Image 1 (cartoon, rainbow, N blue to C red):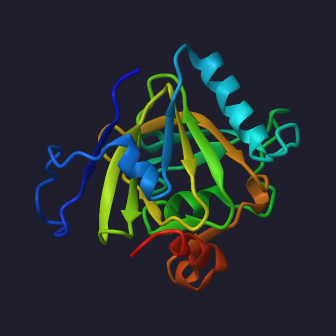
Image 2: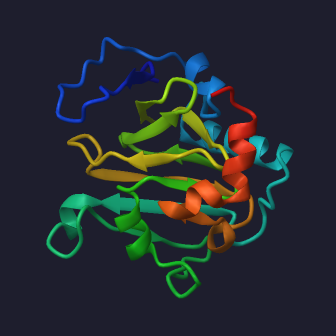
Length: 207
């Protein structure tokens, strides 16, 4: 597994990104974004993630808890900016009929978003998933690149956005949702600051 690439973004969005402003796994964990490295192949990573999810009370055998995803910016660039996520259940039935629009979700990924319920994320193949997360302790943003062999815990109420850079054009993986995918509670923009999940998150951080 490649080492974690994580670094602080400049306060001025027009400034060049300096990856020498590195951030450690421990620093990410301190603001709620925990990354667990797993030795072995994809099977070992999935098994480790499912074990962590079960120990955290996830309904791992329930449909909509473990959900594969596929983001392909290149394929859908003509119809959707920045891309589209397609999701299938373990039975290969599309979940787009549920009360959850993946097309809308992908459009929202570039905005500041948050989850009302926690989740785990892993990526597969040669995917690189680039995510920006807010560090409320320093009023800054951190960018990191999730690669195969890492398990990401997405905290309830943590603010983040997906960075669609050159490495983040095609991503496959699995999301594990504590309240299942159709009920996980995606918060966007003004919804975030007034939601109890955000208040609970901030109460555990010293700002």
